[in-house]
Length: 253
Image 1 (cartoon, rainbow, N blue to C red):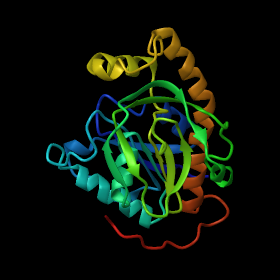
Image 2: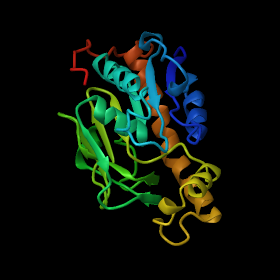
Image 3: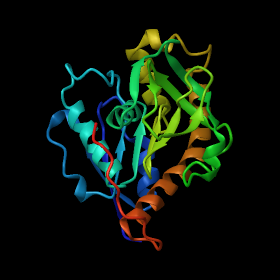
């Protein structure tokens, strides 16, 4: 398998690609990490897949972050071209907006700390989610919610507070409302920068020992998920046996 070229969008320096980048590289990916706020995005055609990470900003705040429009356009183009996409937290919300979904301020307050999400039945047939545990560990740190899924999206995982935790739109574009790329240090930094959000965590859940323990569990579960994402991208790029079906057009929102 030749190296899979992955464009990684880092909207904020507070959310680097972290261990997720190591997992992708170990699986055979070559990453190009781009900060979309700093200049034009590279052409989508240069890459086999796209990862869009999180950030402290609101996904609907184009007035403050006008480059959001360029990110949404690239994500919509990737969905239409059947290039695998992985959107995480803010990235998931931008993917939802790019493909016809809706995002709003969370009506039940911030969701913060190590928590579980539950796979939906349809996830048993999904190439990335099928092998996940029924209730995988994740890291939550968000105040906005994906209120309405894009048309034809398949909901893959939920939680009691905010049901739209993971979905697939199109053939191979995935959105995770939660985080899998963090480290204890990164989460501690978020808590320092957003003490009001951190106060929503359960007692002890953002203590150092608890964060170290849950990140070990996250790595055990989500590193294989990242490997499956790279294999999926390789197959769609034609570097693994079994070519994907021809592209179909989706509206760019």
